[in-house]
Length: 242
Image (tube, rainbow, N blue to C red; front, top):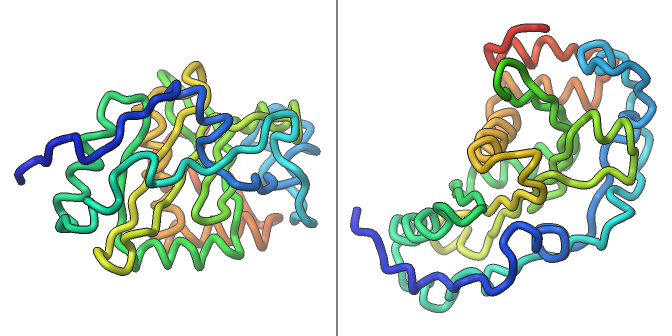
């Protein structure tokens, strides 16, 4: 496939990673699963199967400036992009994000609508992320078109003062005309996540909402919490129970 010149895409003028805190992902940040703050044990494997069902929402990351959306117009020339084929648009989007400290991805509109539908009633989940010789557990919340990820241990220790590690925005401007939803991930704390880990985390998160078998675990976590077992998540990801 012929790659388009990167002049299609606007250059960011502000700091790439730090800007995620002030303009990287959310217009109004939703709450993480409130029961997580009450978990007493340091072992996610022991905690998650005993979390009570959620009862409402509280402010997340309340100690930080609310995240504001980074408009698609500030990343690409939208008017020019309208004349591109879906394939060329995705190729240019992917090229732009390579090596820039951000994650670029895309999905078909049908899959986005499925993700939107399923996340409307199941906003929270836990994902183990392999790091070195073991895994760390990430806690996610979804309020489409946004996703926020933070460390489970940080959330349990700091509650609503826990800061997001990683934010993801889904852009739907070309959903109807090009059957394409552009996706951008911003790593807020590079000491917590590498770009490669962030890409894996995004792919894994999508898989749990879009794969029917995996989504049943998401439903159980949100709707039948007492029946949820973290080892089932490890099993579907072929990770050892530790």
